[in-house]
Image 1 (cartoon, rainbow, N blue to C red):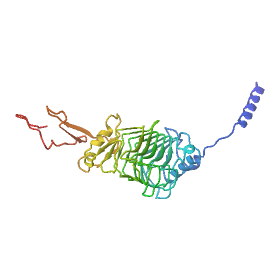
Image 2: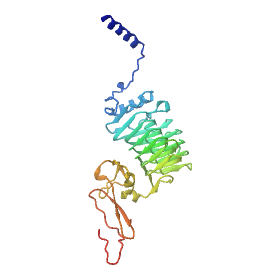
Image 3: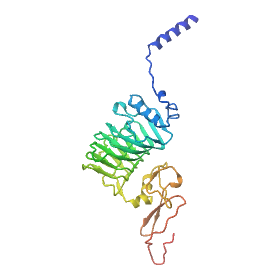
Image 4: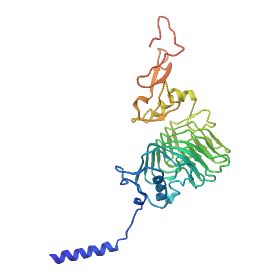
Length: 341
């Protein structure tokens, strides 16, 4: 019996010697965590964020989970996007945790943005800075080229410039063949040519979905392919999206005035139909001028409809929990009736 055990151990040793050794250099980046959904790698400072970029762009990464734990200021130093191309794209999940990465500066990249090419999931992230990668293929605040999911993100970046020859330029993504949902852009978006949109430059068939998004940033281009939400929608899907009527472009989505944004109407429209609270807006004193991404129950927007016998939707107003609304200024009149409450 003992001989059999020894011989079996020898065989195991021989087999293990024949198996090539693979190593993943995540530990070298000093990430805290295990990289899975329950215990993601933590991005705790700018060093970690740069290490993530080097890790993905070096050909590593196949579905790990990463989470931002604090606001990070990149200080305006030149940023190399996370995921340079199809062979080195981001394939994992990056949860921004509602945090903000500011000081972003991208001025040279094939796919330009905080992320270059995304085949994974980017969520709950805010980005501020500038992305002006002249002659880039795709330029966006969050990601240049999106094949995956971008959800619950905002961009307050200056995207492009008057000399920019980038082909596809958008506030959130330059080109989209994945899904962009519950996102908004407040920064200016421009290009001397190409396809320019407040959210996406080019939204393409075969999976391109843009839904529940808004844009208030200015949109300008030397070409005719520009839009408040999407510069050019090539048989993709655009639904429940809104843009400020003074942004400089129209197209897919619905135009709304600044007063309609401020009233809470757009926040209610964006949230409508979603079981989980995503959108809200503080109304009344110290009000938010535009919708915000928040799960705060007190900032949920409620729709109040005033009705008469002749008109079931005589007037509509919006408020928060425990808020107040005033009667319509042009109260309807009818013999022996008073519009009281």
